[in-house]
Length: 182
Ligand code: AP5
Image (cartoon, rainbow, N blue to C red):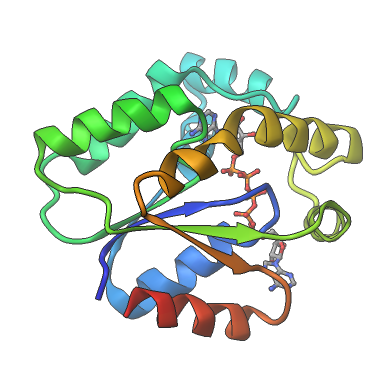
C-alpha cells in the first residue's frame, strides 16, 4: 500500500475528514498544517495570535512558518505519513521536495479531492468554523485557485496525481481512496 500520501483540494473538499478516516485504519502519521496552526492559536502564544489574525481572514500563513512545522514533525519519523493542507504554494511544494530528498522519503501519491464551489461553500457554512463565513470562504477559494491549484500540474508532471470526485457519502469517497492506494 502507498503510505507517503498527500491530500490536495479546495477548502471543504473533505481532506480532513478522509485523512482521519484513513489514519485510523492504517496508522499513518496525520500532519494537518491547519490543525497544527490551530493548536498554536489555542496555546495562546504570541505566534498563535499572529496566526489567528491571518486565519480569520482566510489568508495563508507564511511559507517559512508552515515549513518549519512540517519539518519538525517529519524529521525522525520513519513510518508512513499523510500530509493534509500542505503544500499550498509552489514554494512550499519545492521546499517539501528538498526536505523529502534529504530524509529519503519520496511521495508515493498525491490525491486531489475535487468538488464544485457551491457544494464546498454549503459544507463549510454548515460546519461554522471561525473562518467559515461566506466572504472568508470565497477568499479562501480564490487563494486556493490562484496559489494552490497550480500544484495540480506540478504533481501531474511528476506522475503522482490521482483525482477523486469528492461528491457522495464519506464512505463512498473513502472506498475510492482505498482503491487508488492499492
Ligand atoms: P485548513 O485547516 O487546512 O483548512 P482548509 O484547507 O480550508 O480545509 P478545510 O478544513 O476547510 O476543509 P477540508 O477539505 O479539510 O474538509 P473537511 O474534511 O474539514 O487551513 C485553515 C487555514 O490555516 C488556512 O486558511 C491558512 O490560514 C492556514 N494554513 C493551513 N495550512 C497552510 C499552509 N500549508 N500554508 C499556509 N497557511 C496554511 O470537511 C468540511 C466539512 O464538510 C465538514 O463539516 C465535514 O463534516 C463535511 N464533509 C466532509 N466530507 C463530506 C461528505 N462526503 N459529504 C458531506 N459533508 C462532508
